[in-house]
Length: 191
Image (cartoon, rainbow, N blue to C red; front, side, top):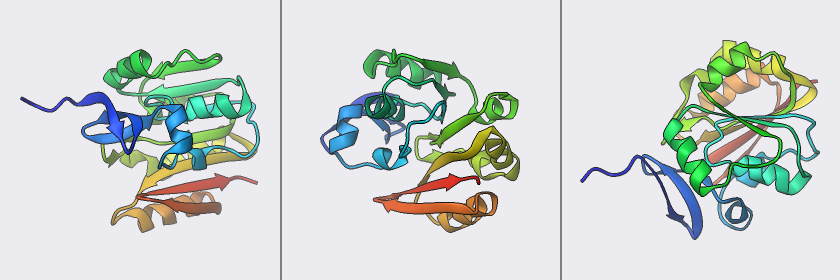
């Protein structure tokens, strides 16, 4: 019997959403007490508007609301199966969360709104969305940020991490990075 592509299970004591055997999201309460990079991706101050690219099970959305209260959130997720499981198992009925089913790169290319916090966590299983590191996408992200805005990227550490970090720093020279297990969280601001 073939392995399910999207399912809910447990990982390191955390209730987790898996895609192709890889943890994509965890329950918000578990994210605060268990291992994981999600808390490091949160902004230090309350954003006025947030864009979450790669909504998954809504871990970041839940953590933002828990930390800052209700705020306008747009969560973009391409995978309809992930969204169905997230809605059924991870409660995406947060106040002020607008869920968009669609391609995040295309969404950014056509978006006319601006944000002071953008979270980029675009994976399908273990595979990152390659277009995230392309200059056109990174320029479009910069254009969506208010001055002083924060964009945060989740990178999985592998042989291409140094090259990806270099590309991000070319577009966001004020970037910092934090290594958390197999993940690298990159936080970048524009002046």
